Image (cartoon, rainbow, N blue to C red; front, side):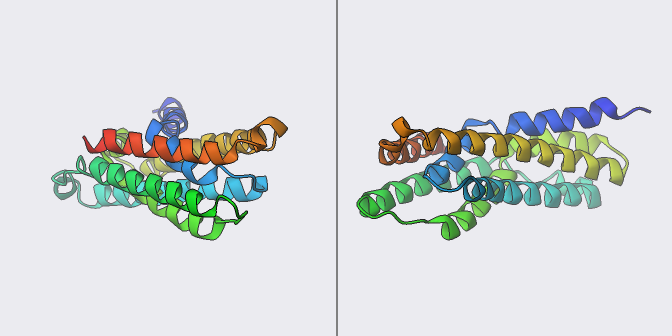
Length: 199
């Protein structure tokens, strides 16, 4: 049987999944800064790493104990993501308020925050459903791993492109005067999307 479409679908679904509003709001809240592209990209990819790691663990659990694992209800994970996004937005807002006069780099702490948010997002209901339905239907361990890896590659490519676009835009002369406002805006969007997920 030819699995080309199955695996191409994994790549495409991963790329589209990275564009979910909650993902973009979370990553934007911490990458809106005038940093070198390498730093911005690393931050975005730390979110992808947390998300992908969780999906691999979920897929492994699904393969190892399908009947037991299917009993788990991951739908409440979206509420946890929403709560974490509200906290993240408030934290970014407060930090920007406090540090508005100073030019500090927050990259080291931001990376761990994004990794943790990626883990939460990976456990949330929509990503689990998108991923675990094909995993449940597949019989081959190597096919499942290939699906999860390609799904993750799709997310990584899209988030890398998104971080590149944000980084380039922030280095434009017109945007450089509005970075503080953009940080407030991204923090506000994270809170709004988080509240929507909680409700």
